[in-house]
Picture 1 (cartoon, rainbow, N blue to C red):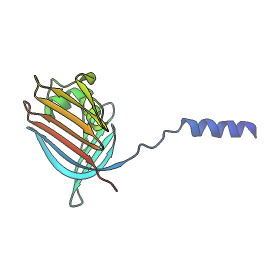
Picture 2: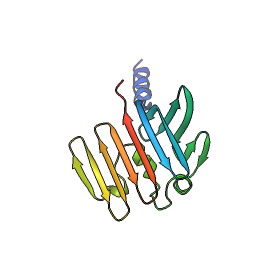
Picture 3: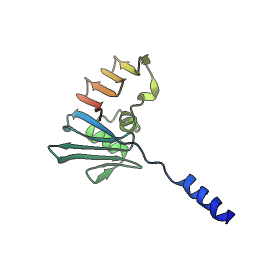
Picture 4: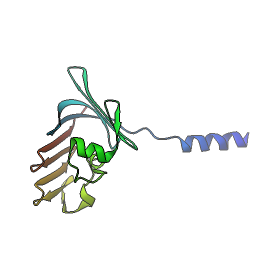
Length: 149
C-alpha cells in the first residue's frame, strides 16, 4: 500500500502544470505579415487570434515556430517575418513579456520595464498587462494587451 502512495506522489509531482491562458488583443505588423484580432495567449508557448470567430493565427513556440500548422526554425521565422538581425529567442521573449536583446538598456517602470535602442530605432515597453514593440527601421509593430475577463 505504501508503494502505491509513493507512486501516486511521484506521478503527480512529474505531471506538467497547465500554462495559464490569458485573453488578449493583438496587433502584429511587419512588411511580410499583418494581423489584428483578439484571442488567447499562453505566455511563451502559443498565441491564437480570431476575428469574428474566424481563426486568423495559430502561433506555437517549441523547438520550432509553427504558424498555422507550418513549422520552421526560429532563424527562418525571424528572417521571413521579422528581422534576421533579431536573436533566435526574440519572439519567445516577446510572447513571454520578457526583456529582449539580453536585457540591455532596460529601465524599470512601475509595473513593468522599457528598453530603448535609439541606434536601432527600437522602443519596447512592457507595462501592467500590455506590451508594445516598435521597430521603426524595420517597420515592425507588435502590440499585445491583456483583456480582463
